[in-house]
Length: 248
Image 1 (cartoon, rainbow, N blue to C red):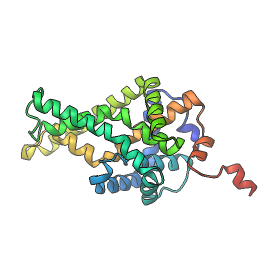
Image 2: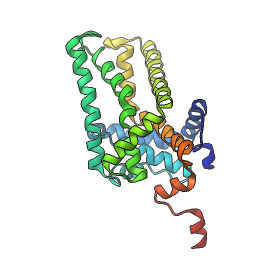
Image 3: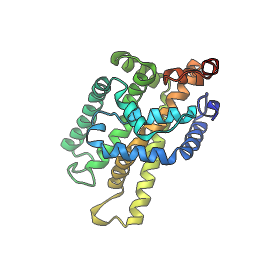
Image 4: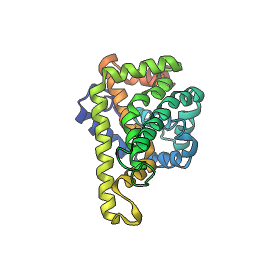
């Protein structure tokens, strides 16, 4: 699998196209990985540990390495500094809670305790604020930086790549919102469910995928600004370069 198809300076459309092509190649393994993430969501989601496994599987797919579901899950969480990743997500989680409490108290969008109002508020807050945090675990895993350095690096990526991150954020929201709306029409919105509630449900069920677009944004940013390449990704993933393997 050629790395130049996936890690290179790209337009937003090319990034989406590359992400779609790779997804088709890893559809079954990443669905299984997502299922494992959701099954463990009671703590994986709490500490934001779902980014690592998706990053590991995506990197292996790009490098043509075996796609091991449990290996990606385990290495994506525990081979890095799990405590630091957990700490990095605390501020992100507290910010979402603060926004929810604000809407709960002010009632801007209605009664936030209503099942058709509360979940969508939480989910939209989650998606909109995700770029603030999602690059931190990636930097920790691949660039092997500490917590403070990873936070600083994450904001650097966000600041210098804001338009691309914003485009991806809008794409994710629109894609899930349209899917949720069509799903609600299909189901006839029975049992008091609304499109917003289906939005929350779908994002929970496919939470592992929510970080996949940002993995591509991260790769593309480094390729455009730092000449990121297959060789660098191979080294950061801890694999032996092909030239060295041939000389062994």
